[in-house]
Amino acid sequence: MHSNGDIFVGEVIGTAILILFGAGVCAAVTLKHSKARASGWIVIAFGWGFGVLAGAYTAAPLSGGHLNPAVTLGIAIDTGDWDQVWVYLCGQMVGAMLGAVLAYLVYLAQFNANVGSGAESAAADDDGPLPTLGIFSTIPEIRNPVANLLTEVIATIALVLPILAFGLTKGLGESGTTALIVSLLVVGIGLSLGGPTGYAINPARDLGPRIVHQFLPIPNKGTSDWGYALVPVVGPLIGGALAGVIYNAAF
Image (cartoon, rainbow, N blue to C red; front, side):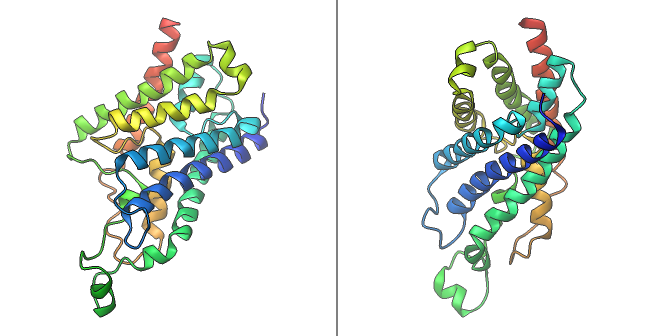
């Protein structure tokens, strides 16, 4: 049993690393004057996967490395242990916001160059200002709340159910490769299921950076799209809960 302090610190650090890598790769691919601009969806999927790898391995000794309220919820439903769920959720939200701020600082010059008027910006790039919310949070390709919610539910089940089942494979735990397998799972979800909504599959990953985006002094940053924000929170929570129920029933 991890202590509340260890859980909070571990989840803050691990989730911050996850978001630093994830928002960082989105910034790298999206922003003007980034050497990785327009690298594509495969780069984004692997960037998020490596973020899971780094964050989970770092947090594991302290908290087990959940990094995701949907994972925490699925585990709680499986085990019936709810005592420390609130600690995990608080750590994940704080870590997600911290990671978003760190990613912003890494690309500070590129964010500040995201301007759309004046001779300097016109000479540098004639595409105009770029919206930045997609660097921090998810945006559906087709805005259909029911379809978007269904996508997030199914994709989160595809994440949390295998994570719960990995615990049945003794060799994974003994070898310490569970986090590696989970990171590859996240890459696979991004490549296969991420097209419709951008695969939040993690309420803290979407909500924390969205809050940060709302307050950051980013030039021409555009809207934080609070009208959509409920979908990438509720969908993964439903998916995590269903995964816990399915796991209990089937295994």
